[in-house]
Image (cartoon, rainbow, N blue to C red; front, side, top):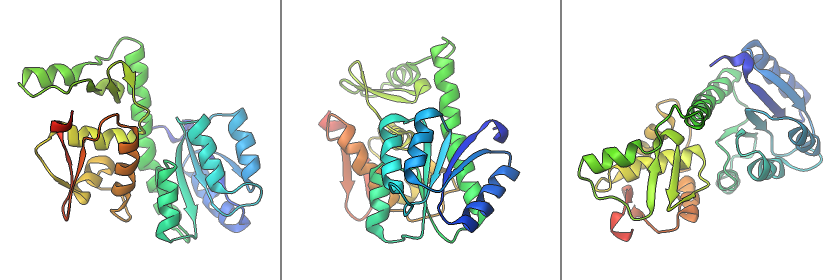
Length: 248
């Protein structure tokens, strides 16, 4: 990933924090647009596109959650990290329910923030390249379907993956999943007899670079269930989650 080609919207109203973190981002080669107000952030999003937005919650104008909602409604290709001193579970769940990619509690080491940005961008930019490849005719959109059939696996009725496009379809309708939701679904769908713990799912989605509470998986499962037309994600109490092919 060429950091210098990556654009960042940084919303932070505390001048010292904004100056220090923005300088680290710039030294790493990111193209950073800074703002201290939520309404200004939305105006910038209406005029420009960004690969990732780092958003403080408590800012003047509209708060960071309203900016996050705007991104989810109008700029779904923009990855998001919430950067805030609010460390209660309710606030974190609210962020993940609005499809934030990560939640970082202040004070934070600039190096740790950069690593989290790098981890998210590695996934989102890879997906973007794969989608561009698929649109140009270079990708094969039914890889998983053919492999599944060749292996003698039980095909899903209406619900299927198109792995090269990082997409899940129900019939001809593409489901509006985030990358994390897609990777979660893909992991469970591939092994319907296996029960995954939260820790195992975190490794599948974030690799070994995620630092945080494993309950992030619960938020992703909740959002995924809302988007799936059938209830096929089973909770195994005391263990984790499993794909329930019998409900298809």
